Picture: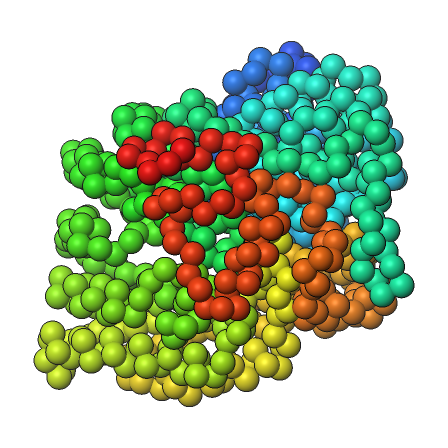
Length: 615
């Protein structure tokens, strides 16, 4: 469909009009009148960020492969465009047909990070859609949520009709086709609530005690399951993956061809939500990966190829895959990006080959400054591994190393923090020993983030440090890093505390989010837009204590807001891992033997993994 004259006037004044015009190579073109259901895939951030999210490309391709479904894209307009839209009375629209989102049958938000929640409400408001579920009758689109944050859906439960938990490749089309067959929202929700991965928040109600802690999660409808088990596509080899990616008109955060090698993680870091909720590990075959990569490069013209997984070099045939992809990319004069590598001798050979002429920075994530704390968080890496990896990097010519650490971790001491400076000094000494005392232009960037306890992890019960304590720790680390050639960055404390509140919140947090939205909060993950004082006002006006959610240690037997969701990893396993953390006991990588996390009760572990020790 063509851009109308009113929208054309706005676009002429917009900072980046290409964010809003659609029509990119490989975007879907259908006649809206010929389909049974129109679905809006909404990313609650700007176009450049949303178009870098591979999950959107996957689900967009799958939905549009159905003749009866038209999936269109919706992004949060940037500040300048939103201001003009509000002034001119222009409602939020889709990129494919410029249709107001309130005219769609379903509007689905991917929830990738908690600090996007006010953007969700802002987009509903911009679309002229009532925010609260109870205010929307059958004339409004069904509002759907999914993604990692849906594993604790409760803070947004009053705004969404349904949440989809887990893999969406099969589940989302089923839900869309069911909606097309139903004459009312009530009929639709009752029909889909028995599907694995479907959580209908209106069918449940939390009951709170006098102390504010949940006493019961009450089922209101007999059709609703006691717990919602996440959806799993077990055989990743058969999972659809797009070969014709949408090619943006403007530069995006990750503007490249991308192929997923495997899903899940076996390392078991105790702070990491992704490592728990994306189990079991499933792999695509090397042939499938290579074929998809070549097809994507041919269909898009991208000059860079990247592999997608939580830990690239954990792929069982990594050496053969990396070698062959280097050959493919070399012939096509295409850059190859291999993120999240295990820095062993082969990985360094690969990195040296693909960055032969221009060596960008290498990234290491020790996470903690002492071996004791690394054992507590189950980061299976030793200091000698880090030192040896950097030695190899320096010998091969790398001049910039990035190190990622966390502070505020459970059982952390100031001695652990001082270990960060000790590691950095040892790395500087390695550079001097290899290159002489002048040391070349060697630089180290140290970035420190704040620990945020997340649902469905062994640390889900742990308190977060107070803002004052986190700042003291940042200052302490900073004093130990006053070293020539070292740059020190740390994450802002206010946003980390807010993230913890939203990550571990219950339904009562919805009122805080709504009030913050009313006060003007949006783009909270952007430091230039975050309004901490307005969030404090929202907490105060709603009578909500953020400390109750962020800084309170949860009881091991406490009913948690997210207990309604079954991620397949058992709560007993999380308790055991929590106890092992207290004892600084390491749990081995489960590729070396099953650690009984509970996933294999319901799903096949290591599907498609070559040489897997167990299945």
